[in-house]
Structures are given as C-alpha cells and as structure tokens.
Amino acid sequence: MKKLLSVLISAVCAVCAACVLCLALFAGGFTIAAAEDASETTSEEVPVEDLPTVDPAEERVITYFGDCKIGHWLSVFDDSGNCTGYVSVVFSAAAPFHQFGVPVVWSGTDENRSSAECRFAIYEFKDDEETTMKGTPVFCEDIWFRHDSGYGIIMPMEKFLPAGKYMLVISQLTPRTEDTGPYIVIPRVSSLYSSNYLKFGGISDKPFAFYVDFLKTEGITEYFRPINNADVTEFHNDEPVKVTGDNEGGAHCINDEDFALLSPVIPDGKVLHTLTLLSAPTWSNNGTGSNMSFAVYKWNSNYETTLKGDPVYGGTVKDHKDCADLELDFADRLEGGSQYLIVLRGIGPKQIGFWNAKYKHSAGWNSYLNGERVSSELMPSCSYTTATVEIIPAATEDVPGEEGTPSGGDPAATPSGSQPVDPSSSTGPSGTSSPSGGKGCGGSLITSSAVLLPLLFAGLLASKKRRSM
Image (cartoon, rainbow, N blue to C red; front, side, top):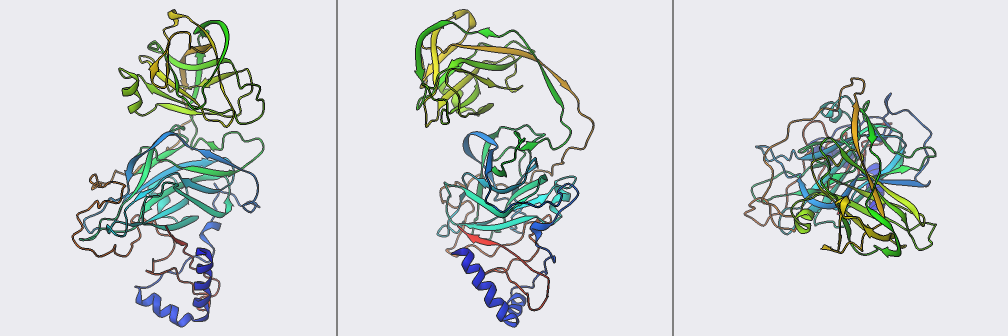
C-alpha cells in the first residue's frame, strides 16, 4: 500500500510539475540528485556485475549471539538540538547481498512527543568512516518509528549489491526541541566476528545487532571476509582430554532446557580451544532440524551471577547428524586464567543431546541443569583441548578509522514510550533534519514526501524512499 501511494504521488507530481516546484521552494528548496540512481553507484572495489533480481536462494548471516540489550541510544544532540547520533559498521561482503535487518528497535511515541525518524544507509567504504560518509549512499531509506518494534525492521534493497567493502550507517534524523524528546535505540549485542571482519563505530565501537541476506553462492562458506589483510592465528593443540569415562548407555535430550558445563581454570598462556560431545545423538535423525545453541560466559562466583554478565562467545550448531561427534570451536576467545560456563540448549525442531557417562572428577568439570548443579552421573561423554596461540602478523595496511565518540547521550530515556528529554508542552515532534557529516541521501528532506521533477529536468531523478512505522 505504501509503495502504491508513493507511485500515485509521483504520478501526480509529474502531471503538475509547476505545483511541485512551488511546493519544493516553499519547503526550503530542493537538491537535484545525480543522474543515476544512487544504488547503481560503483567503484573499483565494487565491480559492475549482471546481478539477479531478488528471487534466488539466499543465505542469512546473523552477526551476533546472545540477547539483544538496550545500549545504543541515537538521541545525541548538539547545542542547536540537531541530532548527531549514529552507529556504523564496516564489512567486506564476499558475495552479492540484497537485504539487511535489525532484530528489534526501541523508540518514543507520538503521544509522548518522542517519536523519531531513522535513516538506514549503505555506503561503499572509502579509506575511513569520515571519508565514506561524505559520499553518496548506494542505498538509503528513512523510517519514522512511533513505537517499539519488537520484530525489528527488514530493509529490502530490491536488487543485489555486488561483493565489496561497505559501511552500514543507522542514524536518528529528528532533532530535539524545547517540548520534544525524540529517541531511537539500536540493540547492543555480542559479536560473532572480530574487529577485522566487522568494524563498529559511530557513537560507540561496541557491536550492535544486525543481519545480512546474501545471494547463496556455490563455493562460499564465509560470507564476510576480512576488511584488511588479517593476522593469521595458528593453534598448537595439546592432546585431547576426555572429561568422562565410558559411555553408560543412556542418552539425554537437551531440547527445551539449559544444560551447562563448567570448566576448570584454564592454565595461563593457554586457551580453551574446543569442547566435543562424543557421538552426540539425534534419535536417528540424519536430516535437518537437530539444532543447538551455545553461549559461553566467564565464571563469576555462581551460576546466576555468571549469567547476568555478557557472554564472551556463542553460536549455533545446525543439522547435526545422529551419533557424530559434535565439536564446539571457541577459536582464541577463551583465554587462560579463568573458568568458563558453557550453556547448551537444543533449539529444535528435532531432538539433540548427549550420551551419559561416568564422571571423572580429576578433570575438574561440573554440570548444571536449568541452573542447578547436578550429580556426576548427568555428565555428557565429552572431551576438550587446550592450545597455545601463535599470531602471525599480516602485511601492513590501514585499518578503518573511527571518529570521536559524541557526547550528550540520553541516559534518562527508557524504550517503553517515556519521554527522554523534559518536554513541557503537548505539541508533536518537529520536522526532521539531515544528520551532519555528509550523511544525506542526495536531496533535502521535504516535510510530506520526496519530490520528483521528471518534466523539468530530463534524465535527472531525485529519489527518496520514505516509510512510516
């Protein structure tokens, strides 16, 4: 319906160009966009390709693990009340992609005079964050949020962007006035990728939650590649240590429950590299659907306190085959000198679990079921490896730069519709303004809708997508 409305508005504007021109001048002027649609902009890093329409098989790559937490308030303002808050992430796409999303967005409401407009833009990455944002985005769309969006937002781009280096920027547009306090909050999470794969910036260098839908491409298993030449991490594994004795014959399903293993203190100078559930059963399922999530926490006194902290690593095991070894690879995330709580959960739809085995106390491991420590008999048949890590430096190359962190955040706000900035009247939010730093979408914002001028300027198109939540 919204797209149809946009088409009808454009048609009316084309028929009555003189009226459109008057409207644009009345709203404060207009900017003529480039002759080509911004989404067709290319560079040496992003080659021109014959890309398919949005119909082929896709691969959704989720970049985070654990719960989405309130953390990135975009309601940062300068002395004039203009909003300068944004978050960004630089990534290198190994395959074409056509869509991205954020799993949850919190915002103010109209009735509290705190609703706000948010801009989602993708740029070709150029040298650093500041240089990149001075360019024209290859995709840009503005959305007005008038309430929390528990289902998040999905941004289809209608066609694929080719493989290359990009920067995603999410910014709040709506300024603050004496009687309005607009705010938008983007969720904070733990990232599955190191900073050489996802380089976060903006008001914080902490990760935010997003995912990307890539064109499923034969031969590609990692859809994010290093932004620059990456250091090479080599693991020198110790001999595997079997945590338990012989298989006792009973299988335990972990669907719909939290089963956790607490490691001993990992020796200094080592990492906990892998944990393997030996011959993990799926009750004869060798197809799809036996899936498991895991999250790893640094141990802090007790189970409950530990889970209040942020996980240090996590992920998902998909389509495990019956009685195959199930290995969790922690890379170099779990450093020595600490104990780690590894929480496992079957996430279905098919069953997954482990074989019970006699516990060897000398290994120093303990087990928990739904937060309660359980006897040694409820212990998976498993083994683990520790390793020393060798870092081989990469060839020198500039890493994407970061801007200074803006000040003036909004700690008093809450994502439940309350007012973050002392509004003193009942008037609604004021008009929007483009964020600073060259983040515009190729044209000035006009209060009601974007304006097309096809009859006045042949071949030049000012395109501005707008939607409302």
